[in-house]
Image (cartoon, rainbow, N blue to C red):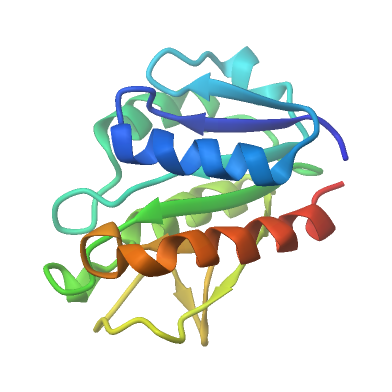
Length: 167
């Protein structure tokens, strides 16, 4: 497997805990990159990516992603594999559960990026999500607020699928 970059905000405590689990399970050559200070060069040097994309407020990307994405909006992402994960609250925000993952997926696909790591929507209870395609999410949806007990198992299954999908 080629080197993998995990991009997330180092200031996010919950996300950092999830990243540690993912790194342990993934093994191999993995770098973490703080999206708060990442450059275009930092982003473009990988073939495999794991992007932590929590959903903020009423279905928005976190400000650090909003600030970073313009720096790579003109880049060609063909040949690059992207696995997305992020938290949402399916009870508090059922009409836009994990929309951040969906917004990021759209951004990456418009630039030729290949999405990997789709997961089932089974076991979730929400109204709408931009991250949903058919009966799947375009990444790993985590709900620490309402389904924390399911997170470890979901992460484990997701990482196993990534090991098969990453180059």
